[in-house]
Image (cartoon, rainbow, N blue to C red; front, side, top):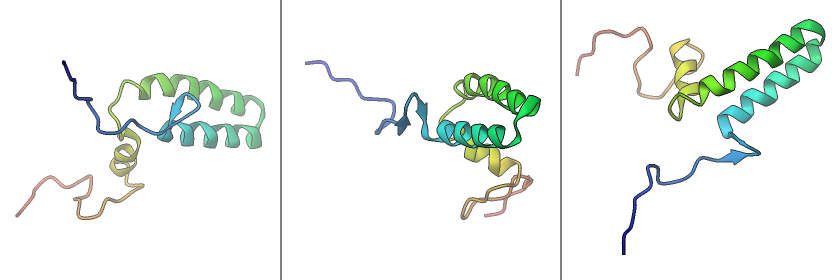
Amino acid sequence: MDERLPQFLHRPVQILWFDSQEFIVVMSTIFVAVIVGGLIGWLLIGALLLFIPWKRTKPRGFIPHLAWRWGLARFRNYPGPTQTRFFE
């Protein structure tokens, strides 16, 4: 009997055909596009259609690390994004 190990222990949470991080980005972008409306709203939807395929080429957890790199999020016991020297 041949058994294969999966790459991840658990499958990512999937809502419709988006993973959880993509779903949050999609819903927030659509929400803002409906509020703003007009040409800017359609540009946001177009940017979303370009962002999702690009994001799918990146590894899991890319969006929180992107937010950390931009200084929008912090990880506990983790150095800042501008830290270049480490002392143990």
